[in-house]
Length: 337
Length: 80
Image (tube, rainbow over the protein chains, first blue to last red):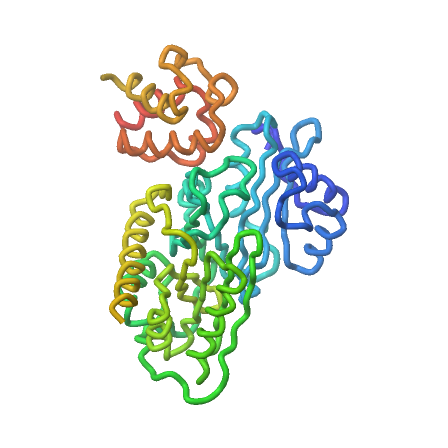
């Protein structure tokens, strides 16, 4: 791309050391993903198929930007796009937009089959939201208070915590039915209208009377955020939830997320138990398990700073309104009981 | 208020009052002269779209780098 004054190249063994240079220019040694500072670890991630990354170079060969895809979900065919960094003073103001566009160029996603690219766009500025929406990503959820504002050394937010809009660029047709929780049927239908067609069914089966709940979890220590991906619900569902709520308080969790698979026909009863325990809707994590996931969230810190959440589209603003209403309804119900 | 004056108001708002309308000439470059980084520029896009009821594509966002360029884009888009 000679007209832009920069080139974007895949990260490989010959240039992997430059990744650290780019991150240090913005974050010093404080970026919370350790592998970016070690060329050998970057290459290990790439060889293991967990990372596909690109660097931008100026005409003198200086590394001036970075963007990557990485694995984030139980579905190995879903990639998260992110960790976009532009070196300050690189003189290429348009590079940020260029790196975002790079996401969607054919051949940049590794592997033959990709179900999509998911992103979590921070809401203390518009840049990522604007770029992603204009590239065709669809807004599917809103994770409140997901990140710690103090962790941003660059572009520090005015709010203590930072919400993120969940966005998806879907690349394959989903298979199998999606069972929807009755409590959020209308909310989720609004999101599904903007995704590829699916078979949507009411998830009104009773909770199972046998078996154990199966979930994977990820603790984001710097953020105080704990995320569970629930693929199977067993007879122990209620006890499972009680256990993680106790543990969440013990480890001073600020934001707790449960993403429940829509392959589970008992999802309405499962969601009812979540709501009884103070969880409220966060949105859809499409293709999270191959099929979709419905995310419910609970916050243990202060009341979210709703006015500080910057949202680009009317779709996202409506989503925030509905999520806030649901949180307040769950709280009211809890107070009455 | 004409289009240029409205645009100047938006840029002043995005700069949080750091810039005055006097420096917002058509030749002024958003980044090099006015110090508006990509985050500030994205906020400007949001305001321009809302104020003038137009859509700014990613290509225009990357290509248009001066106040005059934005003005021409708005006037061209609104007229067309």
